[in-house]
Image (cartoon, rainbow, N blue to C red; front, side, top):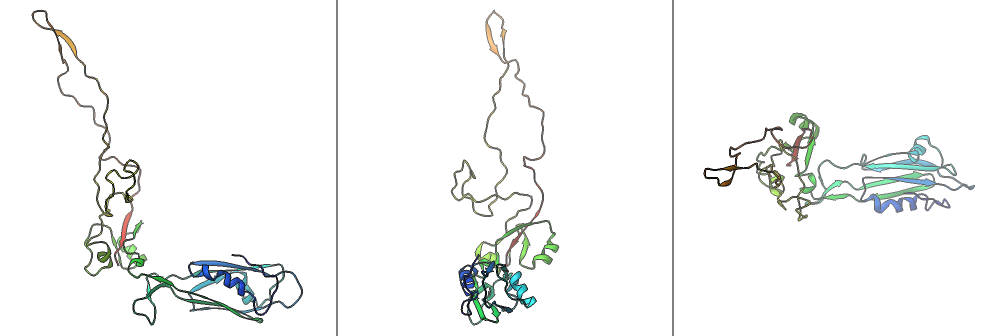
Length: 270
């Protein structure tokens, strides 16, 4: 987002810029703001500090931050920028003072302190349903072993091998008593009433439903050899000379498959 202020006054230095960003910031995981001061004589602001609270909820960098680090004043005709990335909780956190309100990102306050005033923007939290937004039911393909995956992603993930889930798991509450067995099979998107001719011919199967291998119904043209063989008495009859069953030579492997690479599938249950 870009903003050019025609004048610099103590009452609105960067205020319009921050207000312009406010609605977007409430829903975004990151943003970049830019500022350019027109070339004219008069007092120029000096950034004394940039305060972000709670500490660590945003990581900011850029030339606006450098103004504070270098204790420098804004120079006319130069464009200054600040990029901030929002911290998202790995799992939803309960909001203090509430019974059942969870957030994925806390409320944030960004203040730019200058020698011409302090200007700030307050960014609302990102609210969350703790059950569904904890990635329950999400599937990840990985090259990591189960032990390595647990070290990297933490508890709550299991190998998608058809196992039963604990009675108190979130997965059982929302999906069912066991995870799908994804060992050695491909994944297929649910049809959701798509035309069976362009999607799944078995139509709308439930997530986790197994579908066995199959060849599409088809036929081949062929010809049988016969010959006219005279019988005793001079009569002529059509008799199959090749009346012995025959088969073609077998070719191929153990299954019909596309090119593929083996991975481990893990699924979130808590």
